[in-house]
View 1 (cartoon, rainbow, N blue to C red):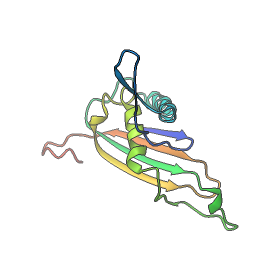
View 2: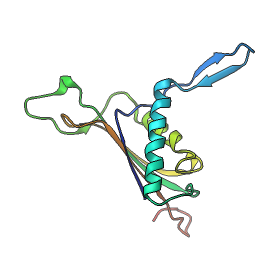
View 3: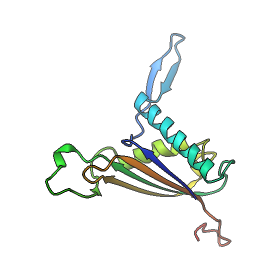
View 4: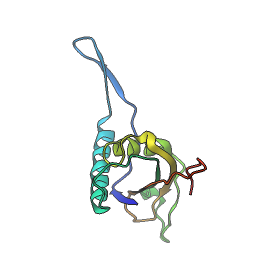
Length: 150
């Protein structure tokens, strides 16, 4: 199993921006904030792969667990500290996951299409808790009945 902790405020996958080149072609690119976050995710996952003793990319079906903990807003601070709770506003959980899955391609697995089981959590951290994202990745053993579930 591969475990990685990515420090900092999680960033959702931004919408790709399109522009026209001088040659008249249309090109797209990720917003800078998404590109920077993906670079941090790739670095943390590459380190996790080395620590797990993995030198090759995962080639089969994969289970991925992601828990994104966002900063507790200062306006939510109380005299009696507030603990973790569910985050019910933007960014959307699927966009947070999309950025991490895209960044993992070529670092942990060949393509993010290999992810067959995806478990997501989005939380507001407790008062004073730093923002971070935890990622757990493991290969799934294919079961002879064809379900792929242990």
